[in-house]
Figure 1 (cartoon, rainbow, N blue to C red):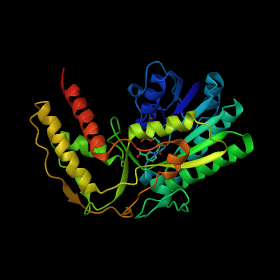
Figure 2: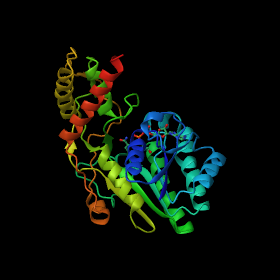
Figure 3: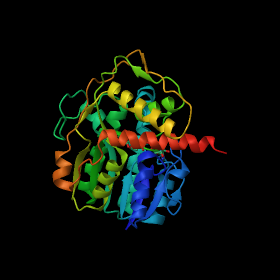
Figure 4: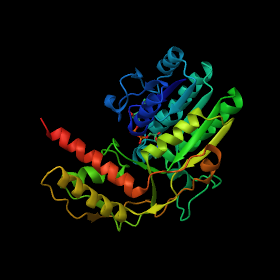
Length: 324
Ligand SMILES: NC(=O)c1ccc[n+]([C@@H]2O[C@H](COP(=O)([O-])OP(=O)(O)OC[C@H]3O[C@@H](n4cnc5c(N)ncnc54)[C@H](O)[C@@H]3O)[C@@H](O)[C@H]2O)c1
């Protein structure tokens, strides 16, 4: 089966590409390397270094590869940039998606999986939100994810394509980019392993649902290779609350242990508490009952295990970078 992954050079897309390649699928990647890196996906994958906003280039790539399924991960994913530049956000996240959907419909792609976001669709919720919760996106990024889902629905109705929106909670794990505004785990690991003080916004009591990247990969694989018909939307999260203080405490211990094991004489300092960020939700959690029932998916990685594995990966990368 031929599967095309947009954003396949990124954090989540790269892990999806690894997993699908290991299982024997034929993979192609579309990525403009704006935040992704060439080393994030297997060398055997076909690579189209193009921008999803370039409709002709996208069409040519799909005509050449003729994917049976498409996994659309490419996005501009900064909420603050979407607020500053809603036009840029819509260009990449809405028009870019339409370019890929249109090209997929033209070459007869049967299945299309889209990276949506539970975090931005449901807003403030103290109990794990099911998919039936009325979406209420407030940022342009959230609006573009919601619009994206509606386009999937349209392409299912109009072109008979089977489409799936996966509404991720907060994804973390090895290879996440620590330079973005999301990815608190990657940001904390990088700071802590460098012996720098990580900064927690406000009192740190911001409850989120952290899902490990391997679990997100499995949800994508099940959606890409399953037999759902029409349009479906599924949450991909754990329903388990973790606040930023708990995260920082666990990562401090893990990072210190990883440094010790590698005989790196760095002391991880206590975190600092900075000002609260305006507009940050106090609580956001999503339920996974629907995907469990329909795609037989559930999160397998406990947050303690996932944080440890992530700290190990960032520590090893630091050691490798410092070894001539
Ligand atoms: N990481 C999370 O916690 C999270 C949560 C909810 C949803 N998502 C969604 O998951 C998807 C993947 O996120 P990620 O964390 O792997 O981010 P990422 O930045 O690591 O990956 C995005 C990839 O898309 C590529 N890209 C960006 N703009 C492009 C364009 N115009 N043309 C072609 N390629 C382009 C980037 O170079 C990068 O490789 C995104 O759609 C994001 O909105 C992520």
